[in-house]
Length: 447
Image 1 (cartoon, rainbow, N blue to C red):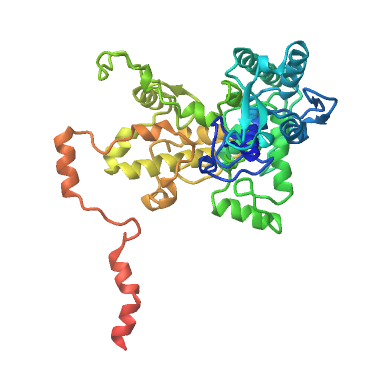
Image 2 (image 1 turned 135 degrees about the vertical axis):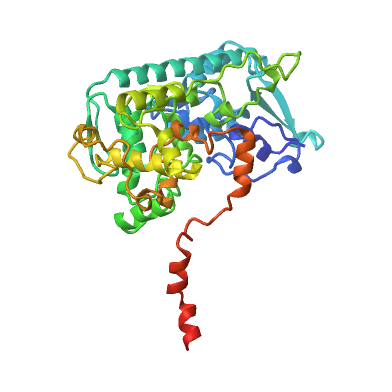
């Protein structure tokens, strides 16, 4: 027996037809989408278009679409399946309003009889309009394609727009002209805040204004809690590492191009698709056609990039007279010490400070000139200056240079014997004698 509550689930629920109460896995809130379901409806752009009823003069604004959907179910016994997957609901309704004037409803919709086992006077016929009908499927795909074309056209306009003007949300540095990517890269590098690649973002001004309004309202961008002042909010986002947006907030979906690429799929579903069915029927272990993506390794001293580690090492050695392999050998650096050294040097250069003598300069160019002229390229400060736990953390996200560091230059057997001979010592226990002399246990023994 099919109840009216089951039919309402069809309006915004998943494309699973339920014939009993046991099939409803969780309560659904109307008009909010059920937890865990993709909210493609959030891709609807803000619009003043009216949604028209397919059978009468009833119409509502787009923001009140759930009112119209409920009206169709309760007053006209029509259920539209997977409404959240329709790219342009206004055009969808206009199309079917015209078609229903041309032919009877039963030519397009499946008939669902409720209370089929009950008395005849309690039985009702409901009509289901879904993409099982080829005409409906073609319409949905066409609307999806039109929406994607509109989004790509909008993104191209934003790329060509030289009137871009926005302030950094964290330090108020100004970015003008066609500099969206500069702003995003700045926030990612300087403030560890990233909203994604510039090529994947559309309606960028509205997106940035939305985030800024949240911060102005003293709201955390990740957990979306509200705080009493900006200082408390700032400390919260820093300590809790909440300098990111909430991926579960589907209000952000419309700002990412990837959400428009495939009908009914969000970026999470596109990226998590299982491609095992793409394997040939032959030997699944045949990797002869594998082509690894080239890495992009950035020099420590300039913006030069190379596709291989050997190339970047050669560049730094020939151009900047910097030999990381030689430093590793001379100072007998372990893998983790190399990691800390690279992160230390990157941070010092970013701050226009000579890593050898710690002198600060007004620009990177002046600092690099000083390093070369004073011969500080291969001069490292005291190990205690850079061999610190804070430099375990990369200065730049996805620093490919860190992936090239190795613990030994010898063969595999040397590596095994080396690892067996060297004990693991905790980072903070570097001076055992000093700890013994300053220990409170000495006072207890004297007493």
